[in-house]
Length: 91
Image 1 (cartoon, rainbow, N blue to C red):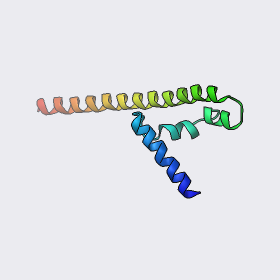
Image 2: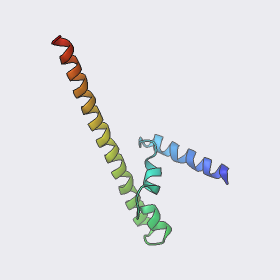
Image 3: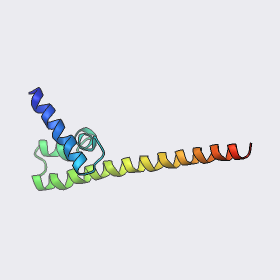
């Protein structure tokens, strides 16, 4: 059983890399929030077609949030660097 889990994790990581998804996106979509596509499919509350659309939406939301965090961090780092440069120039 452990070998199957490791193999599954490898396939998920390979899929994320091949499709330019941030590492951990699929894991987050599966366990990240209540009533996500994965849970709804497990409970039989949605069809496979609905799962495909909803799971794609779940992953898109995660990637959008991660991109937002990267942009905010980049802007913060740029502001800090700019202030540091200004400080050195005015000394």
